Amino acid sequence: MTKERYDALVAPLRAHPHAVAALKGINRTLTMLCYVMYPLLLAWLFLQDDRRLLRCIAVPAAAFVAVSIFRALYNAPRPYELGIDPLIPRKKRGHSFPSRHVFSACMIAVTYWTIFPQVGMTLLAVGVFLAVIRVVAGIHFPKDVVAGAVCALAAGGIGFWCIPW
Image (cartoon, rainbow, N blue to C red):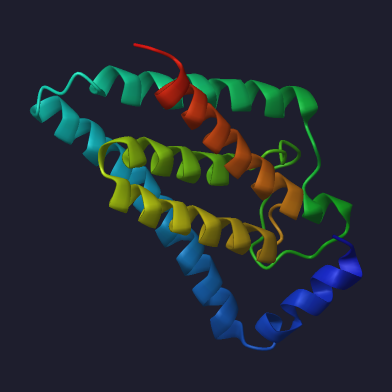
């Protein structure tokens, strides 16, 4: 995404300061929703003495570590490092590809999908919405959020459905 394209995309939001504040609030709320839902699922599985608990911890954890290592090694710049003026300012440098926020939201959705499919589908929609917000906010490029979602779906597909436990 070029600076010109980004500026044209966010011009309507910049014209309304309340829209920018709402974008920040929605970004924070959706992120927290995902991060609260995951321990709730683990607690429910624990209280049910459900044998799927270990898998619901191991698969996301292994995938998160793999994505984090790849991000650190690849160390792609963020849009605001390349001249884009973000709607949600950040100080973090690099580590943009893939988006770990979107990866985590989608990984949590996939994990839920294995236990409660309707909740998983809802959380996947939250992950897509979060991906759009992260791009509009100027925190990630579109390729970053798409890669984060694809990594989560691939890791979930392999970890939950392809590897026998």
